[in-house]
Image (cartoon, rainbow, N blue to C red; front, side):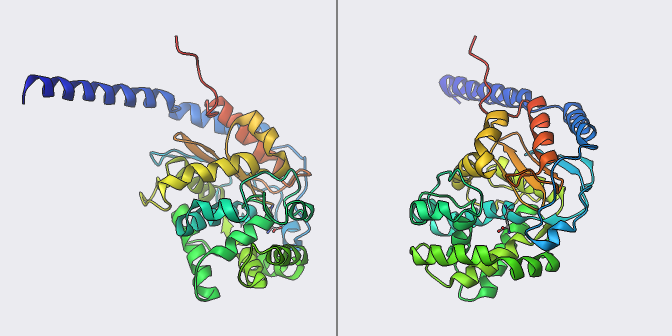
Length: 340
Ligand code: GLN
């Protein structure tokens, strides 16, 4: 080895060590994470705000006291507080992972060109938002865009499409998930509004195949059962560039993760997304089953389940607990110290 190569190697090594030291310093310590989770759990345990979703009859029957918090780091460390075993239906959080599947299969431009990536400023199942731009200039995290995204998953039969979607969710969660049949049947019997949304998206040319099949598969994907730990692993997979930190499997293309998180940031909590981003800086996604996931890129994925929702359809406790925990751990990616 000549001197200059030796010097260069040494410099490179020093730079790597410095970078990893910086990163290690930026990652919150175990005791801080545990303290933040326990504090948020205790602070909101007795909170009685909000109400279960009831427009899907089966959701009204879910125990409103289920309350669990889980945080998973890119290194695969899992921290929990409260009930992380009880399962609720994933609902709209599923939209994130179907969006990721479509982007991986058909390229990120497929989403961008078909339903767009703009916030609607309307409720998640808004018809007005479709009418405004004939089904364009919205995003895959509201119902119209999400049902359209589901219709874009490739497959020659319903079964093939469904299995692909479920396996994709399984990869994110790192275990085999199952469908809550009661919730699926309950929503399938009462989802006339979503059927209308799909028909409109078909009429405007965004859904190319059978809109009824797209709504049916979408309804089933929303009925997949998850606990807070599953959701946190799914969120941590996004925080870790698409690699599941528990199983080590790369479950989506790394190059698409940033775009998925961008849409979560602008539209993940529907028309309250701006408020949420202002308070936390975190890409996130809520579901009417009571779950919310949030991602601090490179640092952690977090999830809270608590069924009572606010008027926008977002879990009250989950929003408060995640905001407290993330802010306590310096999770806001926009928060930077000036260079000295
Ligand atoms: N399955 C629900 C619906 O389509 C999901 C909505 C949500 O979680 N916001 O209405």
